[in-house]
Length: 44
Image (cartoon, rainbow, N blue to C red; front, top):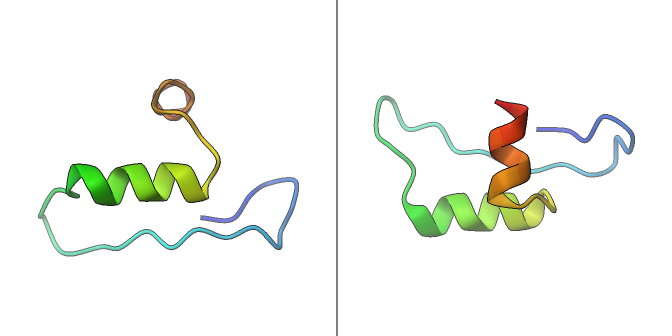
């Protein structure tokens, strides 16, 4: 993912077939993206 306003901010999101992300991995992705779980859900 790349931030829309700041192209230098990038977050790697792993894709492993049909397996779900582990909760800790999801938290780390949200932290790196500077998003709260609520803000992420609002984007879905």
